[in-house]
Length: 163
Ligand code: ADP
Image (cartoon, rainbow, N blue to C red):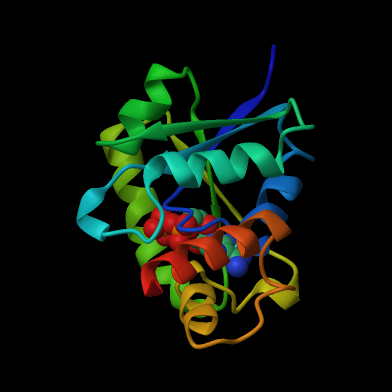
């Protein structure tokens, strides 16, 4: 039977830290379903379609990575797809408390759900999508922080918004 896990998040936009976690997850699972949260309340920089398209481009040669959008409860999305493992990335200590609460809440909502935490490479342990957006908007270089497709998309998005 195929071992599957869901890796959920906002991915606004996907960074090398996210890519690192997906690559690590693939060592344990046959399929990683990247679940992109459609939550307009977060007022993302990239639309849900743009975020999904970027991830699809980055993993276009990789049949083990599937990309889907979801809204509502993560456990409902997982159940609809017959998956009971959720992968989350754990960076420097700041992530811990929120992730701990969420993992236990998801288990309460769906007792079969397990959350697997994975640590990225040290060089991505302080990287977040918000940091990338901020640095880029202020003219900093994000080359080593995001895949080239994302750097290009940031250029287009931010240059267009300045026109
Ligand atoms: P969310 O809004 O759900 O936190 P994110 O896209 O920010 O969505 O993050 C999705 C998941 O990826 C979370 O588990 C987060 O901790 C993890 N993550 C984000 N950035 C990194 C990184 N640089 N290294 C490892 N994990 C990361």
